[in-house]
Image (spheres, rainbow, N blue to C red):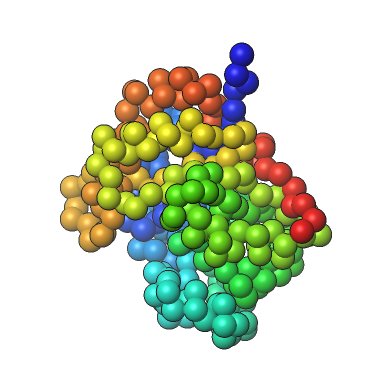
Length: 275
């Protein structure tokens, strides 16, 4: 018999707007949520953070979704290509980065009333050169007794272009930088797509990701529930499609079909290996 596999379903972008927040609470109600990545300077963070923090810690981990490209706190937002170029040229200001990372960690703690269970990055910025160094320094300084786990961007589908690009931008570098610091990592990253899928296509992609999943992998998703208020979000149609699939009864059947259990990554995260 095929052994059951444990993966985590992680919703990114909590705090971005009311639709994302509503999706998080609905998926938590359905028992289909293991991690929530929080944008702590985004417009809808503060008014929903208390309700988020009240979710069961045994079932749902809360993490900082480090954001340097859309809603940073102290420094101007950078377009992702510009940030990547500056990171690889080692032209990012380390002191400004330190202040920004500390400010976002402060904001997380102020509203969640606890340290983050993990840290990842909006558009995967946490793994970029210089950024990862300043992030690891901040985490080691603040949480030495219990380090948050880190999201790995190792591709589950290495032949697919977008997952391979994301991994190449810093997965190995982050692991090398964390070596010796007792950080733990999620497994491979599932859920990467082009944000153009309708519900039928997203369900097909989800079935493919679950089929290739390994124990300890993380399924990243970006759902949003429909709301009465108008929302300006270029990804809104894709977010609605993801929510329809993830909140449908068929999702439980899909998990059962692939012998998969949803569990927090903290229960499966692996320790950093020597580079």
